[in-house]
Amino acid sequence: MYRRLEKKIDPFAPFDEDQTPPATVAAFSWHYLKPIKSWFVILFIASLVVGLFESSLYVLMGWLVDLLAHATPDRFWADHGNTLLVVGGVVLFMRPILHFMHEAITNQIIVAQSTNMIRWRTHVYTLGHALSYFQADFAGRLANRITQAGSAIREIAVTVLDTLLYVAIFAFIALGMFSSVSPWLALPMGLWIIGYVALLNFFVPRARERSVKVADARSVLVGRVVDSYTNILTVKLFARGAEERSAVRDALSAHTQAFLHSFRLITSVSGILAIMNSILLVSTGALSVTLWMRGAMTSGEAAAGLALVMRILAMSGWVMQTVRGVFENIGIVQESMETIARPHGIVDAPVAPALQVAKGEVRFEDVSFHYGKEDGVIERLNLTIRAGEKVGLVGTSGAGKTTITSLLLRLHDVEGGRILVDGQDISKVSQDSLRSSIAVVTQDTSLLHRSIRDNIAYGRPGSPEQDIEEAARLAHAHDFIMQLEDHRGRRGYDAHVGERGVKLSGGQRQRVAIARVILKDAPILVLDEATSALDSEVEAAIQESLSTLMEGKTVLAIAHRLSTIAALDRLIVIERGQIVEEGSHAELLKRDGLYARLWRRQSGGFLGAEETAVI
Image (cartoon, rainbow, N blue to C red; front, side, top):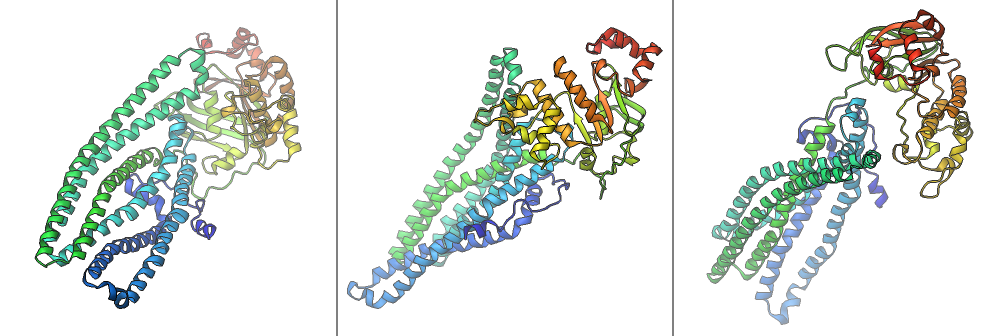
């Protein structure tokens, strides 16, 4: 039964992954709750029924007190036994059934599934953001906001439909019962309700404002801690543990102050509420005794009324905390919304077709890109890489080489001109199909915190074991992989590599990345400092594998060590986003221009930014 209920909501049901969520808290929350609105309607009805049933028990208690007061013991069971059996049976069976149904709807159908549905949809939408979006924020803070958004939105909806409705039913049942006895008896309850609403009206906006500040302080704190952990090697190498502790301490102090500022409000409001509750209890008790003495109220009605008041008073503080929790969650949702609900920077064209690569020709036509600035970086670049041609990009640091490869991969959209692959404008085809057709090895290689096998197979999911091992052998990675063992005793290809592959050396990570590209076997190959982390002996071995890998493929390679790309078909010398020279290694040396000067100065070393002074 539980499993059938738990399948009523599918957290992974298809949805429009590119639709930008609204930018207000209510609309943002409704955007994610709308697919399961029918279940919240059912929860509302269930809460209403349970609330009415529970409050009616107090009326029933008053009836029983009056019954006992007017009946004689020897005739009580004979006169009222059947009625009592029916009432007892209803309470005995209906109350557990109603509560079970309510809890099953809340716990088995709504809570877990709605929470994870929201997390899944916010995560999928966030994945669609451009690379620059992730580079501008902490990974830990993004993950924290996505994780918290799901529980916060669900908690707001469930609390408003369930808890607050339940309490409202008790208050109005009490008000109705008192009114039926005497308007004077209803007066304290009515005034209390008005005062309680006024107190909420005072409390809620201030609680919301302070909750937003607490949420902001918490995000800063989480971001600071994650930043320290992510860059722990830098912290250790520069002996900056004291500075990191100080930074986290400052963030913790700010969070504590925001928290205390919030709780000052709670303490003050709780004190006012305690005074209001005491006045309600004393005034209702006094009026009940007075009316009973005058015969206007039975002892059962007085008992039921006072019991209802006691129940409402017990719930009032809880409701205040619940409302505070609601607005604390609103602060969390607002914070998450500000991060998540941004339009995607790079989107596919409507009904974008998949890129079809038959040959692999790449053409840049009047391409300009300035990272949003007025000029600089790439300006009216024209470059054609013929199908199967191996081209190397040469230039000083900051010349625009990596930007060119990023534009080819559509990690940024060009600001002018266009890029064609086999005559197809890459801005008109789907991003996934474009990147599936291009294999990339970058200088800054990071691996997923998964097994070596999974990292290599990332290039072509579902690859058989023998293909994965063959790719590792070609990348000269198989031998060191077989010697790996992680902290859980997993060995070889099953060993996990740690976050971003930190358990491997730079050269080992690079070889795993090359194995991944070998396995992917895409028609276009981009090598951005592909062998920069390798020692000379391993690099020489890898170069042979790369030569095999490059056969029949269109290749765009970047290297600071000019010797690693000197044998390519054509070398393009880039300076300030412009092509200043091109030709083979021999042709460029004969020309005795910029490339020749760089070659002589470098002597097989690295090409740094200082070469700008030579130009």
